[in-house]
Image (cartoon, rainbow, N blue to C red):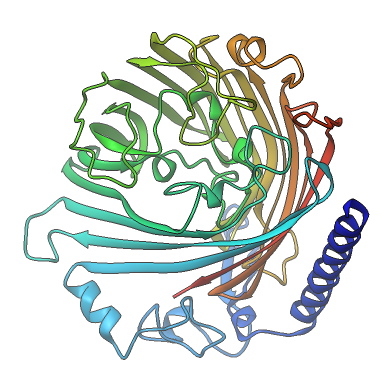
Length: 473
């Protein structure tokens, strides 16, 4: 039975690889209308400083002249599948209401190594609604953001042997079954151009996005260790009630502070046990820097919670208990400190949104009750290096997660735990501006060294292959 199962998995992996190669060839050979929007540049030697001038390629003279609305355009050109909905999107935007809807599908599997070789299908939907208070007839400076989400299907997160899930996109609002939830209700009030206050049900994965790395597992990396600084996992729930403020510089938050309920409430209102388990404080400094006239950031983030935790309690992002449930005493207080940095290495002189660069974060936390004692990642990502593919993105990254002593010491003798290591590479193909297809490859050195008895076997390095499809409506 084992050989039959493995043979079937190998065939499935081969089929997936062939599909990826076929689709990549198809996309490369098909000239989309969206490529006509690619900006071309030349240097004017008669201008001071060799100033760049940008024009759209092709016969059109101005991108603004193409369409009256950003949602308009032919099917292969517009940014969203449904377009302007007969002008309804523009009318709603004029009255302060915009929305972004998307669905993301995953077909991912363990091609070699891990606990078992298997492939699974899963998916998620994200629903964002944004309200501009001034345009809606309320008052200046008011902004409301709602984030709803649906998760469904089965994943291979538990089959890799790693504690750190290889697909963060399938964890929320909860990692099992089909479930929908309103995970974010953020109310923001701008008191000036450089100072805002906010409160509500905060989705921290939306808040902690790092350039060239973040993406919630729907646009960029999928491995949890590369999407966020996981050292903060014990003190930072995924979705929770809270409030805070931010100091802005050129609309970028350079300092922010939050007071959070340490108990997650992704699938509930959060008021059932409102701050009954203590409080979490989260502070972040993110200073813009410029190296060789290229943008970047250097930052420091710290968290502290006076809640009571068990070292083996699951976090919102992973479950550190790899064996039979072990009961240990609770401890009061947990903290984390993370250094973050990103630096652009290239910025398109005609479109500042097109750039690629490097990123890293290095974090440390208490050695229990935090399940992670330290973590680090480093990588490169951003817009594609292929100039004829302006909407494509790519990424290559490495992460290391060092687990705390309680996680390792309390693991059963027959189920020893080491640290997690992961390498991930992906290429996000813009088939159209609203349809993205992303092949992904991961190599995991899993924390679990052996499978559970009876018949315990060594767990080898896992090779995780996947195909992600995302449609923006």
